[in-house]
Image 1 (cartoon, rainbow, N blue to C red):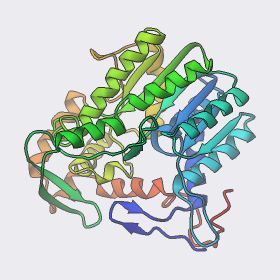
Image 2 (cartoon, one colour; image 1 turned 180 degrees about the vertical axis):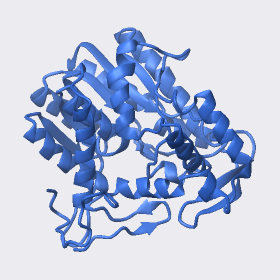
Image 3 (cartoon, one colour; image 1 turned 180 degrees about the horizontal axis):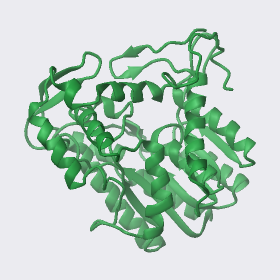
Length: 387
């Protein structure tokens, strides 16, 4: 096949195996170029196939020398259809980990289910014995609670009243305003069930109950807080209520396992398939990225997670809620002041001058293995093969 990007709305329905593999290798080389670091040696990553979860698996493996078990929910390729990008990422990571002499076992399936939980416990016991770290990096919109069989769906809505926000159509490069109706109490509760801390606690409890937590065990859960520009639809909205519940869960885990056993890590804005669908967030990202690049402060997932393990984790420096703040550069006064200066002038005509839409689009395509330097996209490739 000659594989090209097919974009429908906020989704790219194809992925390039060679491009995804090259992207993974580039991230590995960045970590290696910064030298070895002290960190966990046996790691379980829930949500390991892309973004911050994949970056965590790369940093711990190629920076700390860890063996890993990863869990994700991806689709395999067929002779005529590409796999999801995460499936290719997982295979490419496994090849590189094996070449480095590190164990890397990936399980595909619904990490919310008891069936998958039992498979993972068995794999951790067999492959790692115990784990030093659990990275929880799940970003699913739907969750079925295994205890009652009920399925919950998250919503991205404000709370209390309708809000009017400025947004961006990334395909058409158009800035527009839209009104968003508030969530019902039931929708808010469902969002907390999907994206809150309940499942994280269940995983930690299951691992602890099976005797799979090593001395000094630590678990990390990634979150995003954002700034005043995204708060109406993010932190002060249904997603924010779910993230507050993650903070609650971190405190509960620390209460059971020790003062440093669980930490929420607040990370900076990056391009993901999920974030591209959230009103306001793409427009904020386009402006933020240009500002941070101009100031020499921009980071992608791999740079951010490498800095987390290399610098932030050893410091034990937490905010008032006990979080590790890796969004410090994004929320610094100079960066936010410049974003605020540009924001009122943002419209379709000024977007190219005030923001970095080309960079945002390139980052989005790179998620799916397109636009990666050194890849021959005119070549005929087998979608079932990762090299």
